[in-house]
Length: 330
Image (cartoon, helix red, strand yellow):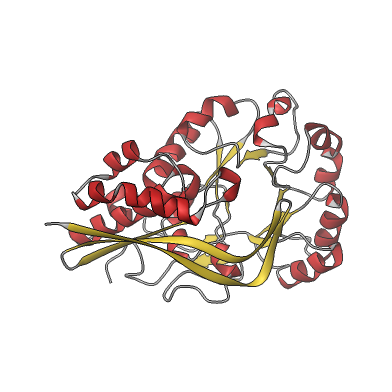
């Protein structure tokens, strides 16, 4: 039976500006892919990221280039050979997973040999702001299990101090988004220990991280921008302790699952993260997150309005989407 593929740009306004070291976001611009086969519909979402040279228009063009392949019945493996890893492939790959499950009358979790998603302790992210403003946000979430604090280079100590003063209990991820240098990581070890930081995420530029090798950080360091697919893992050995798997970097759930297996075999710890997206981008990631020590899937919580039936947060615990939303029969 023939398929049809549709791809479009959807924009989701944020209720609060999302600030990191490299810029501010007020709208989540995503690419939504729908693949239909008979009465069955599979959906997927990708978030083109300028940091990786991606745009919405470029992603839509890339999907158009493989339209005939997908409509001709291509598998996810054929998709991976036809498209590079990235947001465009992620949207198509996840749509194909969703369609495959619906055609088989089963869940994507069952197809992938994974447990059905359950509630996960997922980080609540505090974006960069004046330290006192960050403290105001942190105080509202002082009882959650995990916080993630975005920091820059100039005010990192004040930002951490402000957050920890009002939220002493949660585990803490600190994310400078490549704004630090290796010497900063070395000289701020005592600072990070003082504020009981559990994980330091991509502190230095991904293309200037050689100095992390042999540094002997007392705080585990996680690769984010430095990791996309399994091909990156050998280079990260000795520099990072954890890897942050995001489906928009891996090019979909197919590679994300394989990457998680390979990373664990090589001795890395797992973090699963996301871009600022709707719940359609989060539902597939929850299948990878079951084995992760750190989960950061709060992207939809920044939206003024999410897709109906999506995930929701309950005191720092991410609840799976409603049945039938993605990857499960209605």
